[in-house]
Image (tube, rainbow, N blue to C red; front, side, top):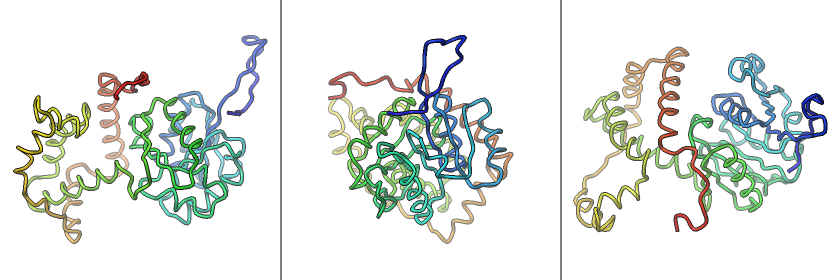
Length: 315
């Protein structure tokens, strides 16, 4: 990997030269800023590109003290970068335009990763000469804290690009998981959509309040799935005979219909959410601080970031 060459303070490192890897962060929204903080804290030189007029003020507010530069010129940000993490608007025409610029102004060994939550890499890369370097690097919010990054290759994405993305995310302390093939919504958001649809349905049906549903999840499934996944949970749920026993006994009696939320009644649910948690900048900051504090409190006891797997582990 080639990087920006820097000459250190001669009084401290008189005979040494060192390299600083450069990342181009495209988009200075919630996700992009969090990615920038993560890369910057890991020692990368960060370039943040966004056409917003207050870009410098946003970076000064959220990324003070980190090696970050700001530019509205995407080509300038991409030139000489060693990795690109795009977190722009979720609109295909916008992404097509951005990735055309990124392809034209990066080396042919530089991964072009998108933080998209659902857009297929094959669609983003359609007609792009750098299609072999384009993939999805989808984080869960906020990227600087949540371990997962879904790495989703398109049909034209090279194995080298996937391997490089996995390497970079691991170096950042993340748990990158490569999907075998692309699918709309990937895996995390497909699961989240099904879960959220059922939560909305239960509130609409008057079965439970918004606040009580959130507390119920935190005190049960949220806690469980923070420690083990659903299949491993099934193994334990079946006792010594494992998941097969669970499926053929307890689970076989769960024949109820789950129901679907009513889109026309979504307004009532949103009203209750807003009444429960508030809206606006102050409410957002308060809730984000609560979330981040709790997340940090549980990460280390749960073993995050995960140590590298040893050969043969998990087989």
